[in-house]
Image (tube, rainbow, N blue to C red):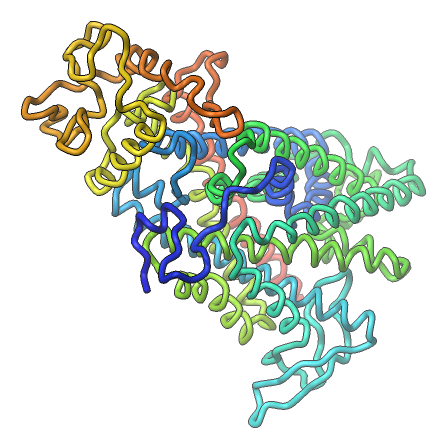
Length: 599
């Protein structure tokens, strides 16, 4: 049974089954953990190579700069949510895609839904491939073997692994049949973990986020200690392994790695919808972003000190630094070398599994939420978000082409979804609802006709719940045409059910009763909102009050529109440049491989 967009937006129970969405009970610490995990992620292991290729100045600068941009973009999404009529206390359900529908209409909604789901599903398929390979190698390492089912023969036959993946924790296990058509035991274990969690709601899966956070901090700290010990053994080479700056070509790979390591904004609306009312959006956004940037910086510089990740054909003191070694893109391949202890190997496996695995069902839940908010049934959304990626991966994950294809899809789409569209949504929110207090949204018309009914009913219910339908500024009766000396009626308008409720627009005019009244200009809304909002003080307890979200504080000295425009153009340009540089790097690597094969 399909749920209506309004039921989905309010977190109802379509068909009387499991709650369509979670409840608003993710605590302040839970919010920190959730956003910290998403802001850190698996790209952490790529950073030491970036530092060794480019020197430490540019990667660390870019790491903090993009972390700051990500925080601003996340705050823009939150403020755009709060400015939607009836949602000042963030009680209405608006997911990423339904926000696009509200502000930009149905065409953009359809386009964004396709791009959004493709990006996240491709990311999940690539992550399932990696985690299944890690699990296969872990089982092989601990049990001295693992098993699978080769479906390339008829009838399918059981096979065993003859050799684990080369280096580190990942890599494809080599099977006794010599084929690639194998469904492995590791894949089945990962599937059994992620599919049931994908059926949960976000608040119900927070235990997994806490497990991931604890493992991330513990095992990453263990790696940093190991980095420092290994670096101390070759302390004379530290300055050459990670100099301040190298040549221009060494800077090329850094942008793509750092930019897409911070692409976590897709999860922000779902978190906001289920955070507890007393959780500060500002603190829960900026504190984890800063902590993640700090941990990533320490990991990057110490990892670059510890190992020779480049070829250094003339030695570390030579001018030619050479190309990256095999497996250098994952520093764990060097931490877990042949001489590593059993404990360090376990840290590597557990880090890979507890950091990568929890991220898969979280993205699946977010995809399901967006589909449900658009009117899809819970069962259909679950199959598309959780079951389909596993089925696709089952028959192709031993083939490198699947992981490569998914990674390229993510590269092309993640920049648009995470960095470009959110500032545009914020810009639309400012244009539509003004630049003042988000509470003014209770008096503004919705931007698109399809939102008029839900938006106005939500706004009226917010007013009615606060007892504001009977309140009006002193000296200005509710039906007066003089509010602060302006020729406008009360902005919530009027109808037969709620006096003063707006019943329609005529060429930019609001209908109050039967007489059209001109709507105030954008710059005049602030003067109206102040006296009306003054009556909201004291009507709700502090534990239920939603603090105004300000993505662009006034002390910056730049208008919100100008700031949003500049940020959207800058991040769009950086994402485009990252894609181009990634393509150039892939072409260069392919040419190098061809030349090596020819020789």
